[in-house]
Image: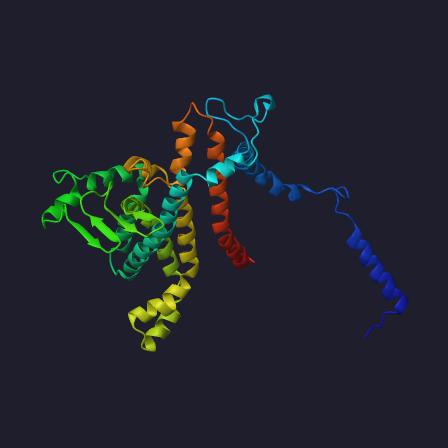
Length: 352
């Protein structure tokens, strides 16, 4: 064994430290190399797009909500001489408007009913596709096909189905076979009127407010067009369910319902959250299918917040209601962010 003297060991360590501190050849100390700048070169164009098409419009919308303006005389940040500052008046007028709360109630119906129906329809369909021994790809394509149709087209298709004329409307023609095309029923506070699907299909009297069922028959076409997203998401989640868990549960004697409740659904919790959050955001932004089916009628029974915003900006061009519309847009955005924030936090925690 060779023993190195103490003083020699110290010199060796100093030499190693000097070697480690030596800067790489061809690079100046204190300046990042080309490899350090490469990620920023890729992020730069995306960041510019984000600033130009997301942050700047958001800033402009929030700022314009504190001024009075219209489409014929829009608010411009580079024309301070034309500004008509009103502060929080637009928000106060919006939050005290009966039309706003009527639209908010209709949007709340969408926020509750639409995600629930999407989950209730897409999850069983995904289970059927998952358990299908043959033709699962064909069934998946069939359920996804409505997603290729725009919501405007879906609304027009279902307008033909809801046509009150028994000779034109598919639904009334089918009910006419059983003599129910014009049937009416009353169950306490609940009243149902068959045949008038987009005008007066029924109402639920709750004392403080009346819930019109016309919203439900506008939501159904949207569910038909959107359920394919849930089928895709749940099918992808089902393929990642551990086969060992399923086999172990079957060996223990679990029934199919118990298998779904205790194994499949807990494994699909991330997929359920994704479908629910996206459905809620979709419901709050709904506009086109309402426009082509009912245009917010009858008597604003189906008018949602996006429809009210559109009316104030584009229908009343000769009145300065753009600031009110901007205030509605800001309130809607704040609500959507508040809904999405828990999902974003959960996603970030999973990634960490």
